[in-house]
Length: 471
Image (cartoon, rainbow, N blue to C red):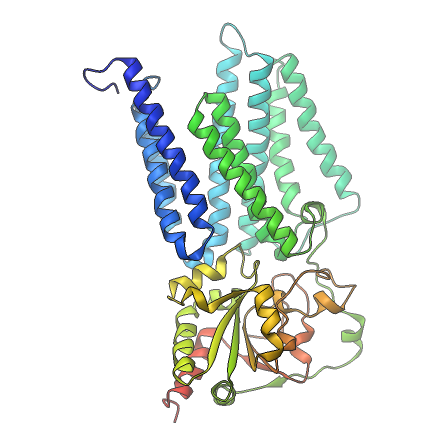
């Protein structure tokens, strides 16, 4: 759509300027998203940048068939609107699905550019074929890998790692086959069946990439897949000669990569362990199997009395709080205890929940003040002076086996050391292992009280007792 009265050069300059503004919005968005205090502003500016880039593309002089542009927007809206309405507990799997759709779109465009290229005169150059091959390989493996991640997070697929002998050799061989097919296409782009074979092999490798990974490593996998999708978008920008797509994809890919590195550091894992390890298999220690262990339990009335008599309380939220949608009741508990003079803080583990920042989002939804949230290292330094550590469904990130049991799959992973608090209370439905499938010795130590039940109902009962409603 050309603006009336303007020549093509002027329109091109205006669109380039608008793209620069959009890129600036993306950069500012990333900066502001790094802090909970500015995250809302970051989201808004990112949305403005994306909308500006989309609308500007409508005025691009190179765009000649608007019907496909509108069909793409309609298809995106049909898929995106329902995804935007999911419950907060489903955000991790929704994020994985978003990655899958983004990767699929990039791969399909790459496939389209390939078939357009081999039928034109002159044919695809070697450089163009390299761009398309890399984009299609990474886009295809990111698509199926993200679908597997979403299936695991939704618990439609087994959460445990699926491994077998010689798996690494098989996986590397499949990846090598895809790269070999790409090399063949670089030197002869029109070889029959090689391109479809490369796509199928890449899709297969995406499945093999994520199925060996257990549930506890899934937040890191999500960050890594985000990096892959960003890289695919950047490559697509080169294929389509779109500068804004190159920059946006590079920002997305690099930020996802940095986040994945940070997550691996937080979990004391390397990329090799994340991608090909057997982390997360159900393991029961020999000691646990040999002896009958007892647990101490408490009622809501007893838990309320302990909290009311404490000076300092650290609440450690996890996926159990998210599943029960207990964040608003937890906020009520914070208010009631604060009125009684109790100093209440929230200890946030970087991988609590199912994705980075999951607990921050839930607590922000309940308007828990940001200054009440403390990161893992700060929480651990205050733990010996903490009267009560209240764990709400945060099974794996409070498991002392990460420090004491060298045979545990999570040995070496930093945890919130609630076992160093004077009293520990754990709200949990049962003694079953968490998402990583690992038993938690925290539940059996003498100073731990198990509060069995739904997190929302149990916290509600505690609040009722503290406010006198239970009398």
